[in-house]
Image (cartoon, rainbow, N blue to C red; front, side, top):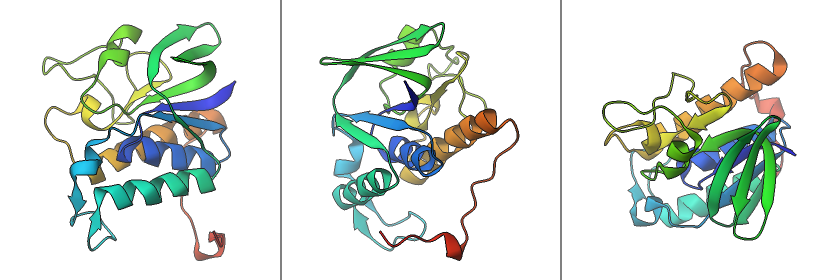
Length: 186
């Protein structure tokens, strides 16, 4: 069983995977490489002067892998809640996870199948930590925002979800704050 299963490999999913893995949670990310980021160019992302969406995805995937996340090029066909957590199903395999972070952009079908509550705007109803009405399921980025889709917002949503997971795991509010002495040569 993995700690965190992330479904979707755009800014929200990759941010969630990176934060979870760097904090020693066993993390798996599933992605079909159909992110809208392939059509984007970032000029307004903090710390980046200008970068193509393709290059951003390449770098972010590398960061997630370097910090210990396992990335699978696979479509998730189902997520089912069990007594012990969740079963995440692809065409080829099943994975079990304690937490699920949904980062599938405008596709909210997995959240609907899990029984997550939706708002009147027909987006997944989440709290400030991105948790849904289904305990230990998080919906990030465009899943919980009607037409407010932006890479920096999505990445922040992924991070917020994992900070909540880390706080649950540690039994107290967790701060993920790196110092210059924490820098690894990667």
